Length: 145
Image 1 (cartoon, rainbow, N blue to C red):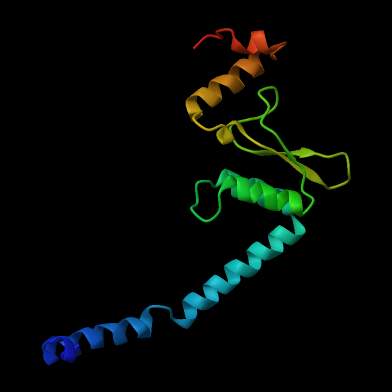
Image 2 (spheres, rainbow, N blue to C red):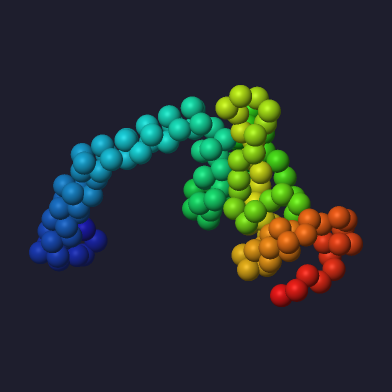
């Protein structure tokens, strides 16, 4: 810094601030907390993969992985991911029995439809619950407000 023309007193203050950050910026307690979260996450993904994926998708947007990346990873790990379906999807992603004991598939929720707002998604669910959709024409006709 001195070679670049910065006053020695200012350079020393900057250096001390950097040193101070190094002493608390990533302490052992933070590392231990992160390790615990990482372990718990890995354990859940290993032992409850469908539940883990479902919860992760419902926590979007998180900023780590795009939903498509999460879904592709789930499929690589043999978790069945079922598409959005106005006849069965709720707003959030849900779990559905696969027919195999203690195994679930993830049903994508209406929240996964790009551009669909939660209020409209809830209206779809309410209309379906009032009277199941018999056809595409039935789905597209106005159903109260």
